[in-house]
View 1: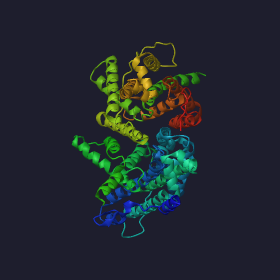
View 2 (view 1 turned 45 degrees about the vertical axis):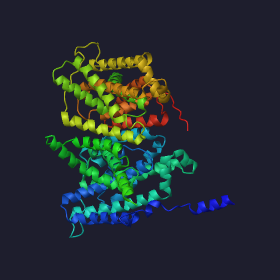
View 3 (view 1 turned 60 degrees about the horizontal axis):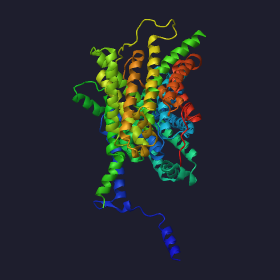
View 4 (view 1 turned 90 degrees about the vertical axis):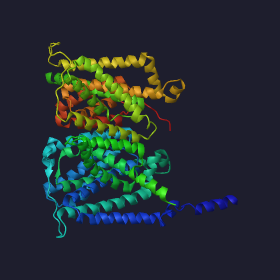
Amino acid sequence: MVADVNTTARARRAIPENPALRLSIAGIRLPVWRKIWLILALLVAVVMPFFVEDFSVFQMTQALIFAMAILGLNLLTGFNGQFSLGHSAFFGIGAYTTAIMMGHYDITFYWTVIPAGVVCLVAGFLFGLPALRLEGLYLALATFALATAMPQILKYGHFEEFTGGVQGIDLDKPESPFEFMTDDQFLYFVVLLITIVLFICAWNLVRGRSGRAMIAIRDNPIAAQTMGVNNSVYKSLTFGVSALYTGVAGSMSAIIIQFVAPDSFTFLLAVTFLVGLVVGGAASIPGAIFGGIFVLLIPNFSEWVADLTGRTDAKGLSWAVYGMFLILAVYVMPAGAAGLVQKVTAKLAR
Amino acid sequence: MDLFLQQTFSGLANGAIYACVALAVVMIYQAIDHFNFAQGEMAMFSTFIAWQLLQWGIPFWLVFPICVVISFAGGVAIERIIFGPIHDAPVLSHVIVFIALFSIFNSLAGFIWEFTIKPFPSPFPEAKLLYTNLIGNHELGMIVVVLFMLSLIYLFFRFTPIGLAMRAAAANPESARLVGISVKWMLSLGWGLAAAIGAVAGMLIAPMVFPEPNMMLGILLYGFAGAVVGGLTSPGGAVAGGLLVGVAENLAGTYLIGSELKLTFALIMIVGVLLLRPSGLFGRVVVNRV
């Protein structure tokens, strides 16, 4: 009987309230804080473009695009535990899908975003299928090969009719339909909207049944399989979804830069995403935003470093700075900026 | 037939380059079970050091050993300083640090020596040694040096106490530690050897591809392909795999796909071998216990 009582009691406590939710800082509970920060961030994101010059708006748009791509990589690496050094390839496929549709078939930009995502979903899924048999390092190797080969594939002579070969494709920015917004501001809000939608989707995906399956596969594939998770379906689907996110980001980048060329999608771009992922925080959704802002700001920072050494050209130096930060992140804050925030909150909360 | 022979031999010459890189990759893989994505950039950096020494007027056959020693020390230092502390960290951290080294070496080389292409002399004599046009002196010399290096490595691992200790440390770290082998120094030694082999590879390749910060990316990919084809557990296999990849690449380039898609060919080769025969041609099958 005693045992029975215990089981019922345990069953009633099956979904315990997260004790962290009851903690508070300065008398305000943590979930409320989270909402406050979210609203503040959104407010800044909406208001700021009206108070800065067009180039800064362009940079903010770029940060959002990086954040989207990093989120895609994070779904795969952070939440599902699969490596990819080849996400530059999917970014490129997304960008080229948009560029080809706009440049050759005169389709409006808005109608190319979803096809770009779908093409990448399929490409990612197909690449994910053989990748199923490759674990950890081998997958990193295969995706490394993909990233290295991508510019060459885009330059390939037989595709030149579509891809424009080495020259790439020039595009026109869509014009702002409103009088009170410049083209750049309008484009920024389009990208912001898509980013928000994608982030909400990712948030729901990760907290739902599929997300739990993804995380279970990352933590212990054999146990996950025993629990009835279909590992191969989930892994290749995650690869597809991750490629979709990165592809949509690529599509956006094609339109804001108004140009695509094979050499924009090299292995170093994949490294950029990885830097953003690690510095922002693996397996953290807000971390992708930190990551996006970080990779955007670093080139400026390295120009400053180059100035210190008395050289005028910072060409290439930003990669050394990226590298330093990567090593620093691995040693000092393995959970990235998001982990740092969490630690600080845990210290402050009572 | 002439074209076929010509392409096969020039493939062997390229293959010798890939074999060098593949050998270095396998050396590190043996020691720490990881691919060193920075291998190519380390070799490139060594090559630049050699170039700098040559600029200062030091003769080639003196530069060669100096550069190998510097690279060896550099490899040991990298292991001691950077990888030692995170030895037990998850795979992701290791891959990230490799990538970090990759970007640091790449951009530092560009920063110090600029991105312009530089000439690099061949150490081998100009005059014809063989009565054939199929293969140049430099290519032939390169193949000989690589095979010589391979036999040295074989002898080292097979017949010296340190070689035995290194094999033991790689095969079973716990037991090796119990019999008094310093496993961490064996790892550093492995890194040093790999860096030294990379330096030799870089100096041999440099007359053909010219020193430039990005000279190694494509070659590294082929090196990986060679290592995977030959089997990641076998140094001899890596050399054979590298030569094989060089020939296959050249023949495929001539008869099948043209020269534009050569890197894609490496991609297909890597994925294909990993899928069909993950242990490679000469590797042994590793069975994991659940």
